[in-house]
Image 1 (tube, protein in one colour):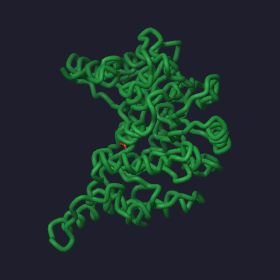
Image 2: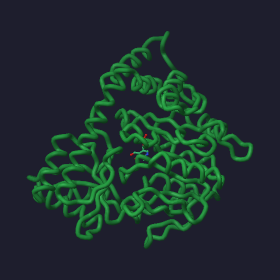
Image 3: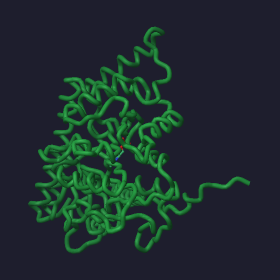
Image 4: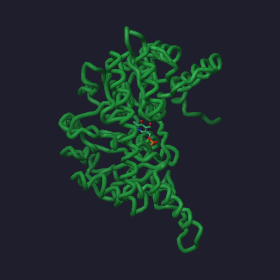
Length: 406
Ligand code: PLP
């Protein structure tokens, strides 16, 4: 008789976005005349930039001719994309990363889940709280998190690092020593980020205790502040302790097109075992390469036109972020994030819980956001709005907040 991986049975239900969808559907059915503005989901809304679309079209045409047709892509990614990434994302920032340290994939979600394959089950993980849920859930699936306590909403074997306004949403070095540390900056959900000197402290700590940092930089393109690092490899020694995850989803609108990459430096070793070789083995065995058409489109993001056009999209979203920040501040809210990230994290007023504030916004102002408690216990009392809506709707939403009515 076969057995299932019963770690899956320990997972709490993922109710956040389904509960939101149900509440919005019920409200909308009862109030069909109301116009609901959705600032909840972290998905882009602008179409792919023209330079990317042109390259997609020409890559499709290449697939139609015997001379230019491509079959399986190289497991680790096409050389043209890996070298382009190295030149633009790393060399240009003074980071010593080489093309054989870049592993092209179908996105940062898969990589952030799959990276656990190369680590032993008895590693202790540390995560920020609140957090992008994939890190914890995938470790739970691998049997690395112990038991789940529904009262505290925590796993017994996970180190939670609270990120609240008291510590500027930057985790503190935990009392217990972790083996694997997940960091994500600019952060989802808080929209806040980390200064280079603060990140250097984490790198020094990881090197000292022999931990590995999984650094999720999916929102790197939104950074505008000077001393905020775009890559963990801007920190000294980071190639000896860090893996970096990157995505084309938020910088170039590839959420539905799917492309990302992971950097595993050759310096990164557990004893004398190279993590780069382990990940190459894992990736080559379980992944057959991102499609040529998509990798070609990914390279177009780095062309002069591509950079200009995707830069304009990011500026558009960040203008929405400013509208939201300014609107909330003017209405007396305490607001965080939204400067180097497309997320705005606000303190709920009058000691409302995150869900009470969700209901208030939906029912009184017809605005949908995301309750902070859905991202972890320390998210209680906070709320996330995203800058990915249209400029018109974002302005309209802030007018509703200002007037206290829809
Ligand atoms: N990492 C973080 C922190 C995210 O917020 C998201 C998506 O929202 C992802 C990764 C997923 O990226 P991708 O679309 O490349 O899978």
